[in-house]
Image 1 (cartoon, rainbow, N blue to C red):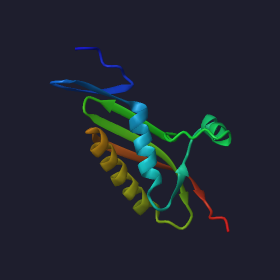
Image 2: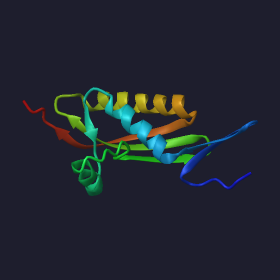
Image 3: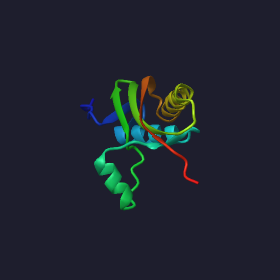
Length: 124
């Protein structure tokens, strides 16, 4: 058996192995969180903001994933839209992210921690 890379998740079967990079799991989490009504965007650092200005889209910004064996822990930093109930929206994000990762990768999501980094006002 090969040594597991810390940045990939391996699943072995009779006909071979499947490797899923942590970046893929992060992207799944970011996309599914952004689909929840009330979430404006993912919050990222300075580098992610710079990349966005130059047209580079990083779908995993604001997402940290730790995979160990067959389970994953996810941390998200979100910008919310003003006027939405934060606890309800966060609960929807947690559920949607966990379901998406589980159905697409087979990983069991043990935690989805959500941090609200900002509130965005709707522009008219």
